[in-house]
Length: 442
Image 1 (spheres, helix red, strand yellow):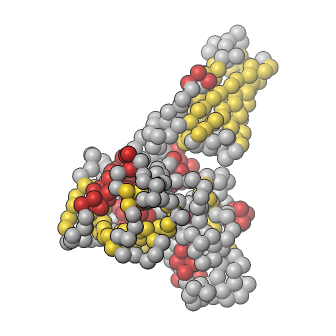
Image 2: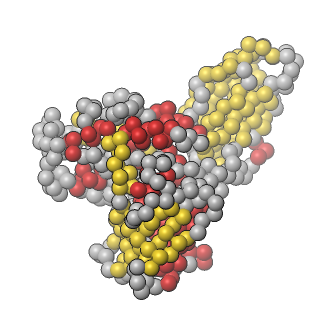
């Protein structure tokens, strides 16, 4: 059985230079093993995120409703969409940041699909989606957890006051030592705590607010009052929303698939959960359940280990955090490349990712020595990969390669008496288990 994750003594977790400082405020009498578990969970995020901010987090350990492992209550601030976009633009440090920034809808407002509102053209409370692009409050407002706002520079990095509260159930069997394995009938405290901290840092969706505040769970309200779009929601898409226009997000409460994308909805990187009431019985502030997408899955099973995945890290990267080494050191991707001389002035370069993990920010270079001239190239990506569509001169391109994807470059040039050497190099933090297939000399 899988359990659900819902959303005065000071303990300061000192951080390495540039990493997050967690200021844990614990309940009096909290067991030391619980305190130590939160500390270890904080260290997981310190290993991933390189933001020089202080996060003030109340932690509790008490009885919760049945089947609930833990819950997080975020304190939030409201900013304009323009402020949010400008803050992201000031912190571009990775290939994903660049791609995400280029695909954002133009300020000052964003368009979204929504439903179940009193002003729905199909009838008050209708499940039918409609395009909301009238530039009103819910199209111009972003609601950020305080920690996310600090990372973006929209709130002072060391601002006092509570950023969030996390409470864990004292009625569950917890394993506090994941390093030696998790007992089959116990839950992994450290990684469940890390999951809840992930919500506090910004992995949230305002779709849960719409889901909870529409019939039969609540009243029917005008779309303008739903000023709860989060940073993560800006990268929430569906095939229906993308058909409405580039970058249009899907903020509807229903059971249609919604997915994470950083290119305006072109490439599906992983699905989101869809909502407890009108969706898939899981809060929208998670990855889709039972797909092994990452730490931010909505449920944990006894004995489950879990980990922060590359997909988790890519989300936190594009919502405003700085990643240590760009992606986690545990990522492994077997990149391979092949080059065909073809005709005298035309050849192809094929780059593929044989897995097991997706890779972001790989460098593709094709240097042809000797007398050459008039080099032009085009790139076609498949399987969710991304690359520059056209270029001139030698290939030197930054690419993203989901598992099983490939990229094909077609190069036109005048090459006289030279070898064609092509290579693909993983970015920092990625272990390629087979480097022998990363360079090709036909």
